Image (cartoon, rainbow, N blue to C red):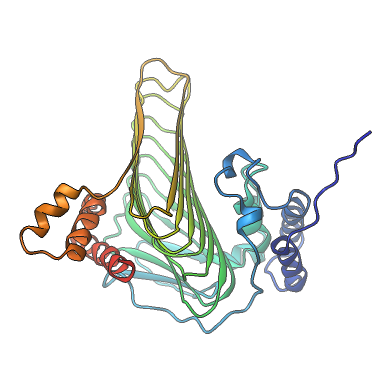
Length: 423
């Protein structure tokens, strides 16, 4: 009888196990929390990092792509200026939150305190056997924030959760609950430097009560050698609206997962994503969206700019339950491929069990329209500037959908600077 043997641990898998041994006793929590950490790490040890054989990781062979994992520690990270002036700042510097109090309209608690008290143990679980991000983050999470916005409360300022890292490992959790008819805009920002390679994971859980309106923006600007694994889960109550805007503009290896449950009638979900890919980076955005009740809507648009030898992935799955009649779900992935050496893989999926729905998906890959380029150059604009204008127009259309003028201008400037740096 042939017995299949487990392959030896890779350098990255061994580094993960060694990191856990080194951090034993330093991670917050004991008893049930420690047991949960041990269990999650044992899953990683037994299964290893996911490969192409795992369907949800088919385009991101993590066992091959993640060659090594840095040790804990790192350089001297410091807080940076907010993207938008007068934002409410929730900093997480090299994996550690600040002890903040007195924030109007927000109840806030460092996630470290929830780990230390054991209250966070219920969240230290994975979504399934293929949830490497949940397993890795749950085993190592050290801090972050848990906050809530009360019912009928409208937070006027942007809330910026700023994770700044300089090498080493950082594992954060964010938990946010928005009461009935609450309104808020949150900016989840990841900042790395070019000095040292780092590994970061961030697991974010959102709960929107009936009628809540939330805009959640993820700006990922990690260092060019960093590895970043992010996961956002969200549950929407009746009449709730969640708009998620993602900008990926950094990192050597990036995966951003979004798992959304449209659980209340009349709820609406929007995803707008801009992937700016250069060098030999690999960036993966994976979405699972469940329409589980009647009369719900969603819209997802992903725009990708690919330069050099960069590789990108978008996996988007919409599931419409049998009871979810009158669902309207639209998804599109558009890629501007500006290099013969670049790649982008798109896998849009619809899984529909209801019969009275409007659902569609599509994907396109294009180069710059040379007629448009000629039009601009014929009016005295240089070829480089003309290309920049066309690329900006390709992605700025999504940014314009945000209803905060200062935020729109800030994100446009952020994108424009990336294009200047990589153009």
